[in-house]
Length: 191
Image 1 (cartoon, rainbow, N blue to C red):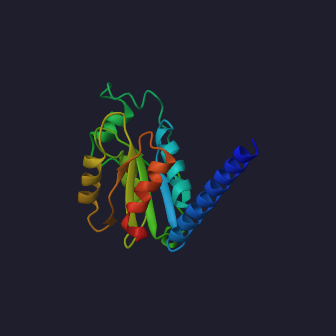
Image 2: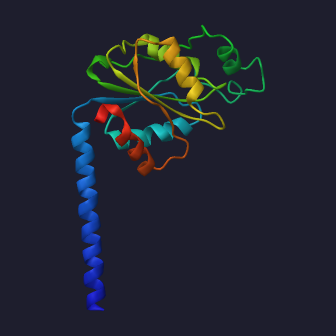
Image 3: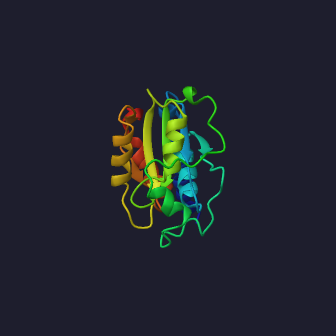
């Protein structure tokens, strides 16, 4: 019994030390860049992903909040007259946001998160990008989706805003914090 307890305590001690070292390594990598995790979420799914990403990066969380919140009727993609359908069918639509992020110039890396709507980023993401000077920043998209990949939304954003320093984006549907850490570790801004 004594040997068992000794082995168990040793294993717990090693695991604790390993975790502390990994956390210190992540903090050391983060210290060179000030990170903002900006996101829009209509139902809470993207908000959950953004919170995990903020925890993984040590960044600051910022909610892109529409002046007029979206209702379930607004999000009915089967209704061609719903607010989201009308906005997504108009490439020039720019839903108003409540406020700009103050001191955006202080950040080196901007993660921009959104749900995929009609295989694209919601138009409020265009509002956010156009309301802030992101030139010279590393911009990394992330998204959530019920069935689409992130590929077309990122291609469209890169085409619309070619002067921004876009990095590889990621669909974060139901990703664990460990999987998010693995993705973060591969990004260029940490190298």
